[in-house]
Length: 492
Ligand SMILES: C[S@@+](CC[C@H](N)C(=O)[O-])C[C@H]1O[C@@H](n2cnc3c(N)ncnc32)[C@H](O)[C@@H]1O
Image 1 (cartoon, helix red, strand yellow):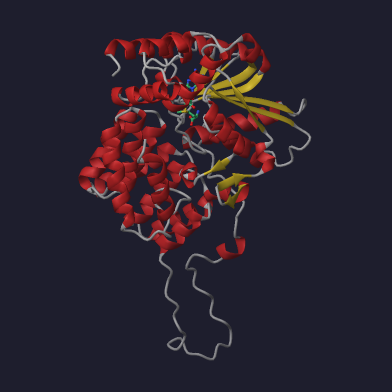
Image 2 (tube, rainbow, N blue to C red):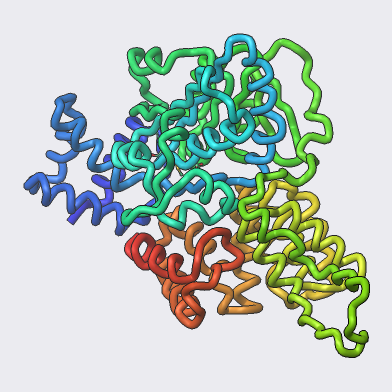
């Protein structure tokens, strides 16, 4: 058995090594991981394990790798945080592209990138904004301390779960299906380079090998486990690594103005962002209230005439109006869901607004509209709609769910938890709330609670058709979701 003081000692050396002040595993999990390492190494004396880790040998480095690969939580997915993605897509990246026109260079660092979804999302956004980037030097570096995550990032094969917040357009355009999962195409892969890098103890060689003068550093959901001193240390290093007029983007509330005092803070409704500049700063003008992104249509032919605009009668029609066969009106909800499935948010929202101008109180369509606004990062609009819906339909769960997702995106997990719990109180079978709440518990190391919720979600999902879309998730089918939960999460 491991004594309490020994686990405390281990926690301390882990803190010194990676900056993590709270290991997001509960005490029993932590002990189980350590005991399995002792068994593997055939070490019986636990003090000896601590010495082994502290000896600066090649073997101890390898052991650190093994231990951290099991301890660190690398939860991530493509296009995480729709508000920040909208800020990048509509404001930051277009500015970097504009400023880089002369040198044809853009340099970005995704620090704590885990399995690579974050830097690859940025690469896809750049490819979309700058389709002709062949003559450019686009250098996106993803770094992490978890070597197994970096290996997976380099392979770039992903399961449907990584696409749960993705507009299906990106999945269809940039990935192809393989037996092992969805493989990212080589064009996007070639834009990103992955390296091992410890944010709190970078040796000078690895620090300088990243190069300096980054136009953007993005470091999200990494500082949540760090203590104050470590965060200041990292932010200081970031400041030295960023070019003048470059940006630092962190998760919400992960750093405060005081920790980023050298930067100028720019506030936008979607997120705060830090800029290295001597100029006095203004906020991004009505920034991310940009219209809905116009993504190329995937199936243009199929999208024509999807809404029920009556056909004009053909001249000289020999049938009387009574005899004209009336084709059944398509269900607007189905039409719109199919547009969402194809990633054509723009047409979907146009159709919804057109329909709502006649049927002002259609709850389901208003929910779909709020969902789309949340997905494309227009959080204020989504919140407004949800608040209206909560007043008119206080017992319906969907508006609570959208609000919970937005709170989660903003890093306000306490508010998100309160909302998910409320949803499960109103409708215990709402599987997405169980899954999201379970994910929060996993991140907090509360394993028993998360397992209970995930089993309930799997039971609920099994009652549905496996080929249906797992709404409210994007681009993932019920069957795929069940497999994913069984494979990855029930053993968390
Ligand atoms: C929750 S993931 C965040 C992934 C991605 N940035 C996102 O927001 O989706 C946190 C990552 O930070 C990494 N990490 C933790 N401590 C680190 C350190 N000292 N240096 C580098 N990476 C670290 C972990 O290995 C993990 O992959």
